[in-house]
Image 1 (tube, rainbow, N blue to C red):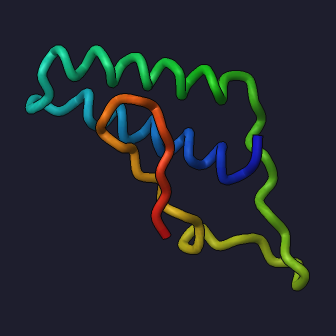
Image 2: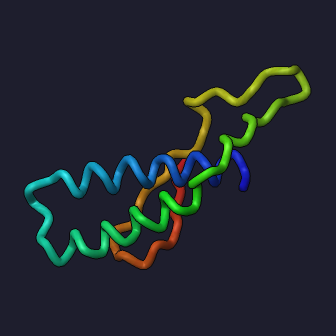
Image 3: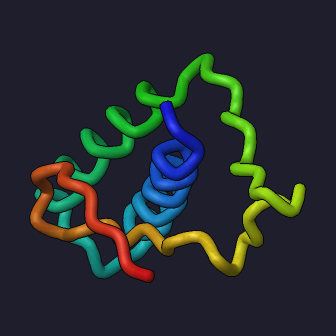
Length: 83
């Protein structure tokens, strides 16, 4: 698993937990969100966080420079990222 994939999964877990805590989500929607949350948690279960990329100047990537993972809401589990 790459560093970016790991960060994406963490971001997805955070967003799914936030959606599930919302009173505006129907029970039917929550079923799909819970399933996606379970899958995301399984993907990183027992995996140590990969090291951050190191560049030629010896610096690691700034958190602000990382792509922001956006959880799509169609429930198919596909990834999408925005810069």
